[in-house]
Amino acid sequence: MLDLLVQNATLPDGRTGMSVAVLGEKIVEVGARIQAAAHQMLDAQGYLLSPPFVDAHFHMDATLSYGLPRVNQSGTLLEGIALWGELKPLLTQEALIERALTYCDWAVAKGLLAIRTHVDVCDPRLLAVEALLEVKKRVVPYIDLQLVAFPQDGVLRGARGPEQHINNLKRALDMGVDVVGGIPHFERTMADGALSVRLLCELAAERGLRVDMHCDESDDPHSRHVETLAFETQRLGLHGRVTGSHLTSMHSMDNYYVSKLLPLMAEAQLQVVANPLINITLQGRHDSYPKRRGMTRVPELLAAGINVAFGHDCVMDPWYSLGSADMLEVAHMGLHVGQMTSQAAMRQCFDAVTVNPARILGLNGYGLEAGCNADFVLLQARDPVEALRLRANRLQVFRKGRLLACAPVWSSTLHLQGRPSSTAYIA
Ligand SMILES: [Zn+2]
Image (cartoon, rainbow, N blue to C red):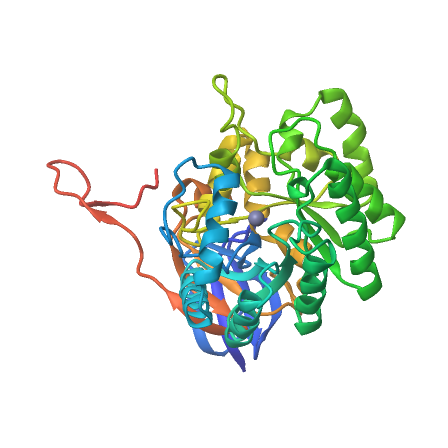
């Protein structure tokens, strides 16, 4: 006897009339019109059943702090960093945990069940590290939370010398933080940036950890840290375990140089996270008109065989005042900024918030196949493109066969003579 049988679902690959059979915490069979007894039956009514959303780039230590202690007036990355510096001494562990848990509630309701979050390690108290390790423990039943040791103020820029932040970062890793982070474009010089990439990749290689660096998050066409990141990945044999986040300078780089860079990135199996909501708002702030978009070259990276995900990055914090843990909103913006409007490209945008980030996090048992975890989201949409168009309602969210969240079907009642009595925005 099955525990759960989902029937009449559409899958992201386009198959319709599909059933998903669940026993305990696992999917045991995916097939057309499975007939079997189950404790619980779910008629998907032809709606899209997707594996859960995954966010490969977030800052959970800063989330929901908008307006504390003040609002970012210029809207730039640099003022955001300065503002975060003002907020840091005022943080308490209880408030950090409470805000993070509230965000995780939103995430679950939006079917977002795996998040890689950076956590600032430059505060010598490592308050945020302790808080997010506690959050990670508490949300284990419903969210896979992966932590990145992120030296927000520059790993080599400690006031007491380069060892200061490096030691903090190592302490954070000792405490159980999963991934090595970095911010080479914020080090004092290009040379220090390159040195930070080398040191941090060596540290990751020594400890057998993954790397995820904020890299070239600027409009500077001459920023070259992604080249160094690809080189160090190759040199240290870290293929497939290193992610470059943002890479916004690639938007502004010389086209000839990019034609050399892309194969180097592919050779190193570097993975990429673009953060469209944040990149479109933070970049180009020093331009008059025309104003650059600032998002990295997503279609070209994908065409070069490089795995690309879209991350949320920020929700209601010093860098971004909006957001609601909705990865479809993130993908929707990515689609527009990258002009990814063909049917195939729109489907790639859906993959960029599901299967692609799952690969970046190295999630085990992710997917809609026999043997995978029974984690899935039923969306009020008939296919991935409609899900993007509507930023579709999450009707049911399951984790390991257990219902975590549900919402009523969306529709608006109409009072129009001679017209239907309701609409759900489906033609
Ligand atoms: Zn970030």
